[in-house]
Image (cartoon, rainbow, N blue to C red; front, side, top):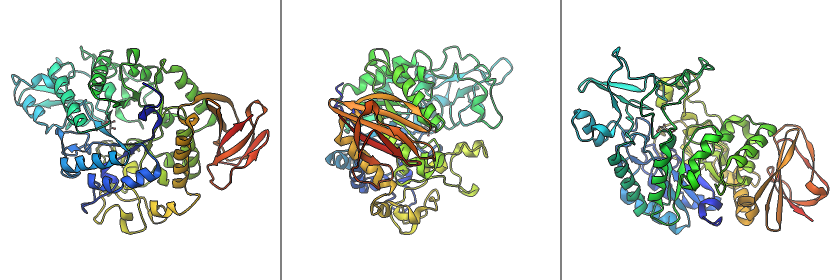
Length: 530
Ligand code: GLC
């Protein structure tokens, strides 16, 4: 795949559809709402949008419990609205990536209804049914990712079914060839409608141990952790046979030109990179969440970038993510000043960046009062800080009531900062974080060195994370001060340079000599000169 391929050069923007833009006043975002905001996405400069699930769903896990893979949930609109959206997105030069949720369906999916109707049903084997253990309890010690046992007893047919997430999300049996065929046909349904790719939900979960062995205990478990961490997930996920499934999905996408396969994978680096597949026959982009889990300091981040670059298979294309609908927002993790530095990091690293809606306006930590909690995980395991509502609050568009997100009552409260922090206002503030994101995306588009150029680490000095990006004759230094003290930083090879951008957005293109003075919390992109 050439380096000019759209998903290598482009910036992906994730939309959590419930919270982006409501068009019908029900307090929940929808497809027509997204369509109304496409001009915003082109103004910002993004290349592709990824929309979290919009399929027919009882919404036990807000769309990650699918009841019809080829339908649009009425909350989000109709198939016609979808066609309209993709047509307009394409006309504006935007690609559209859908979420695909193959590991489990909703318990309301007709397949599961059939499967549970009797042991003799032809779809019985489409799900994972097991007899009780000899003591009558669950077949093994596997735990649900949202807490509690992962096995649910079915009184009528006297077997347990497996659910890695909620009991309303029974896992499909991906060892069954009919399941695979049905799911690949669902992919084709959307590919035929013009979808440019998929982000595949929990792709590393698809195949479980054939013998359903017990997971070993995690000796480091702490009581304030989610219950899933009691055991190491040795047998319940990331089995060798999963790679065959991933490459089958890839082959389905390859029936169409230029489609992208992105995999959601939370695994340590060496296992993550296996999802590029043998000879790169797997996912184009196994999502790289390392920045989410690494402490925000220059040394550790520099080390992680090097480890990741070194671990990539030959020809494997890197990618970077700062946050998503399951993780605390970057603004909440590092605060408003460092959120700007984080933006510069995300958009100047080698590989495809995925941004999360709302990060570009600096939404930070949002408190969700107990009575407003929506997330089933928070309801199952309350008070541990596991809830995902804080990162799913509505987008802020303008200074009106509910910030232009809805004329109704929003499904989750807005961050109280919205009256002073919204797209309309920040667009008119030359030094706002929104303008920083826009400028970074613009620079990345103008200079190939910043997207596809070679990455060259520079040894960390104090709190400064620095690296070079290089393509043909272009050479850039990126220097990011992750600390709160000023720091003088030497330019490499005794060169001079020109500041292209400061995260503070308050200086012109200044020429600098042998060293650059970084202010606290400042990041700079410097064009190096001979
Ligand atoms: C993924 C999704 C998450 C969902 C889970 C179960 O991790 O990102 O939101 O709850 O899978 O589908």
